[in-house]
Image (cartoon, rainbow over all chains, first blue to last red; front, side):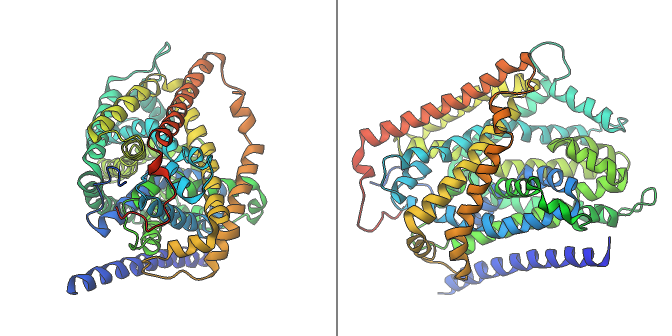
Length: 37
Length: 522
């Protein structure tokens, strides 16, 4: 696999994993915030 | 009137796991490699474009329609569409959101049971020694009983695993949303992701075979060798079909799940999270297992040939051959089929819920009667699917329900939401209680791009294989009566549901009156 393809794959993985981290962190942060209230 | 909507989600994490589980299914591990491999890396371009322009927007639309309808006491799309569009036909257009999941479930549960059966066969090493694709095809045909002479394809083995799978599904769905579906999703989804990561690490660390490395396998998904395939409509249709199938949009199940949300509970972040989890399982995990390992062991040309052989070729023929050749293959093979089973279960357990909820909410049947009626109906309809498998009943049901009606329903709901209900109102409804605010560009995407894209796909599809499928061109004469039986089942269910809608709107019309005041909190 060429260097460009590796970059394409790893950037896509990073974007999807990053999106998951963003979503779940927002959900859990909100849940913890509600518990503290 | 509140109907019988006493059930609901106990936790937000449970809801998201259930929604993600609904999306994550056999399509992530079996269908996706089969669609992507023949086009090489070019497939991922229309795939991601369709995901952003159609898939994710439709997810938000379905969550919004579901929560909006649920506020009026409707758990299924006939009632939900009635609340979006004050026209007598709207409720009848919503019939697809009950019909499609129930009829897809009729064959999906049987396919899911194969994974459980194969997990057992792999764990006990029963096909060990069958080291070619053709030999494994023979094992598969024998497992299903389709290698027998005569009209009926029956295998006691396959039937026992079918009964176990059916019993698990019915038990989960009968327990309801919070005690059944939510509990199973909360445990199965993380387990499924862990199993997937274990398999992915195993595949990515395999040593070279005949000079080929795992990098050559990944190139089959990520390396664009021929840009000209992007000019062919086929690749766009395949990508769009995969996005609909993998996100489970156009199936009516998301609407029903979202109908249990309260008016000020978020749908934007939750919908995006369900999509993100599905993509993690499909693109990061799913794409790193089946195709790379098939290319590693068989080479590019043969792997593409296997992928073209159909959805089950890679998962049930090629991978078992590979498991027999790799270190720890029996263990990892069992994990693979258990993962497939869990992925199937998290999708199928939701498939009969819209039908049950329709009976409860609109026809006001008790839960016990509803569960009994749905279980009996689907079990009876599953029998021809199992017994006449070799005559193409599954393909017939899949074409009309999993492709034709699904695309049609997606087109209807995107037009009703964006152009009839109106996106200005829809956008406001979507953002009520939202944890994140969407960029304004998605307003225009949902307003124009998504409905237009879906309508173009419907037109393309009509100009494609529709006529041949309708007229059964190329179908052997002895199989035609069985395909007519499949059509009779679909039409019978459609008539039952249309009559149910008509009956509901006639017998308790006050429930369906336009309420200008605040919708009922479920």
